[in-house]
Image (cartoon, rainbow, N blue to C red; front, top):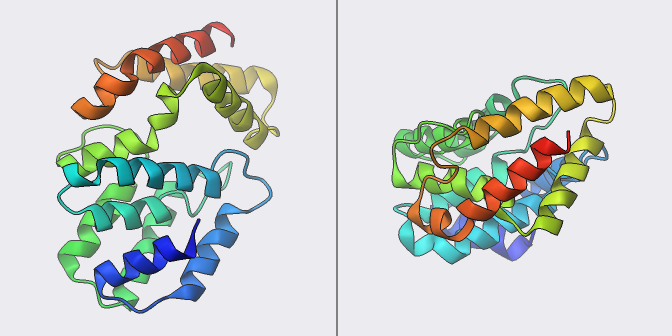
Length: 202
């Protein structure tokens, strides 16, 4: 993740450079047990954000939420999103962010846990950007599934296949995978094809 993007974001918030925080985030995303939830995922999210930022109310808040949303990623933890949000809140408070800003960014991160019930336009885009991989081309999506399995390599195959199928079917069961009209038009059809193929292969 480019340092310049970080510095631009810090300027948008009126913060200092906070380069140690940037380095800590990079180190987190470069942890050896990660195969998908890496700097590459965050960079992809940021590219999508750049493409749709004019649609957002507070794009710099969504940007910071994307930087932090997978900062904590422990395979057998059920609190990764909450722990990532705690880190973001601590960072924001240390930099004197207003309470409403802190609350919005915390929510943006927390809603990525269950990918449901966004109440604002920015929350909708946050989810769609995070799930953009579902509607990627078939070969990119298949690499995504391979990398998710790598991250859960310690989970026995039968258990992994059962849990993974449940997760993927939950997306297929949604009336629409994507919450915004932008992503719906661009990626919904491909996402459903990818998900159905992945479920059939498990």
